Image 1: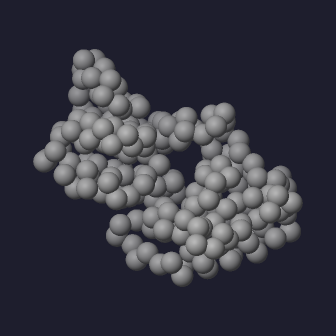
Image 2 (image 1 turned 90 degrees about the horizontal axis):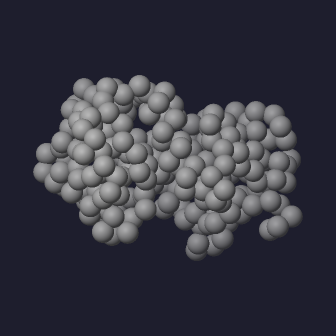
Length: 224
């Protein structure tokens, strides 16, 4: 999963980004509202973590513009302001959740997962593609009931395909999902990770197919 952290306190941003990456999230960070607004017009994220008191365009301004564009990305407000009026206003203009600093990482991660779950059909924690299972609570994969251990990038790619719910993901979508802004993105790397995942799935009925010119699709083999 890929998150956008919008936070102007450098120490807090560094701590949050590190803690979230340790939980296998891909995290991009920006420190002001104008940069955040520009980035949100170009990139897709699973969840946005938004501080309200940021330089340039305010946090509320970022949120308003996001919803004016009808962008449905879940937004979790992270703020030191515990005012009920402020919370109600943020929820009214399009925030999905509101968390007062200081934050506990376990709670933050649980709320992020809950926001992702709300976007899925059935809002379930457990997903499956044939013998391939995925538990959103633990973000672990199983294959025929056994844990499927994956390196971080392969895990992020397979997670992105699973969360697509049987729809196609373009190569650019996958590049954007598994690489952060400060990393060297590579289309060839996506092909390599797809190849490795196919090898790990080949004994099962789950497979990744290529739709030329369109992208990749996680399907049950008999349905291909």
